Length: 526
Image 1 (tube, rainbow, N blue to C red):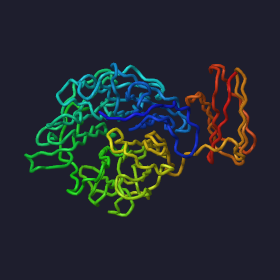
Image 2 (tube, one colour):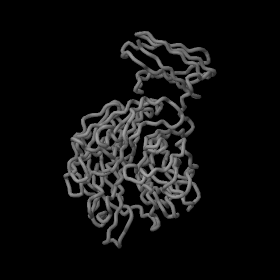
Image 3 (cartoon, rainbow, N blue to C red):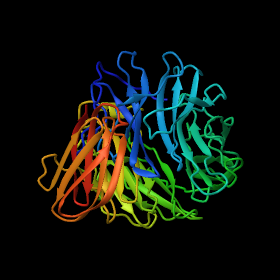
């Protein structure tokens, strides 16, 4: 559950124009935070972002909103609000999981207030790339146990070729106002999210988390279908063993094996108000390899650390490359694997801010690894401004950013205060040898694109300075791709006619992408 603060007015965001710099996915005077981004495993151009948004005129009601992109983040659909399941209920803590057959699942909390057990964790599904959502189904009932186990749900899906393919799993932690003992919780669905098992605790003795307030579990599904869940544990019966316990299930979440997992150093307590979210991810190219990323204070300030698991945990590796113990704090980390095994971590970084500690200006940074987290690339900035510190950052409700990675591109969403209020921003970075190409200005002399329409046809012509592979797309005003043509074009003028009689009247975009750039033309079907 989140405590959030609102101001007076929210301006609805129009479809973002394509550009290289960060894109604002929200705008206005109300707060937006804790975004999540997901990428379609079958179409890396299809991205969906979701976040928490204070809704205008509702008495500071928090709603989950989503936007979809079908061109790698160049343009986005209009924001869509997910429904509340009760009068004056609040929503929070969104996460998503994309099944490799095209279905996208989204989990979020919807509840009445912090003194009630009205509400729970709900799951909805999109079958058209994030443009529309099904009626939400209750996966966990807030009244099901005394812990009110509905805080910070993480949803994952089994995309393996095992018999467990398609299983959906959700982990949660107790509401933060609940007194000890607390436990990590788990539920699953084996029928595409239509029904869910009663949520169960994950921490039997001697792997108990009962003495830890709101112990958050983090799940990951390996490429062989094995489900792993890591959670913080502290068990007096085992010599006060403190660290993380790793759960493992080879039968789709029906049963679990436990082992004491990664144990942080005694000094690993980050300072100030640094956000202590951590995440476990599975290498899609190696069913035995996991990567765990967390915030660590062993050097006297908050750093980003990671450890690889392949039957045993590797020596922790520091990912941020600024000077150790310099007082600069890094937090809010998010690791993600690409289909080819490339690993990336994004985080909030204050190395270019003023002063030291948490209350300093920040940017979003990232680093990549091609060996499962043993070694890391030079740190690179992903945000194009230094966002100033604001006291709103001290409060719950802005604890996570998110990233998704394809074989050649890293996409990230985060909230920062550059506009005076917490707003959601999108950024991307090129990875590998075949990079994504940014959209060039419409007046580019290097890529001449013309488009004219009648009621039944679209005539497109373009001229290239050199032979090139090209992709020609027709997008509607929400960014949905209606036509896509690929080929090899010579340096001569290219002309083609595309039937459009089945398209409704209105505004569309024609986007031409070649190896060195891209251009867009706006058209109107009369």
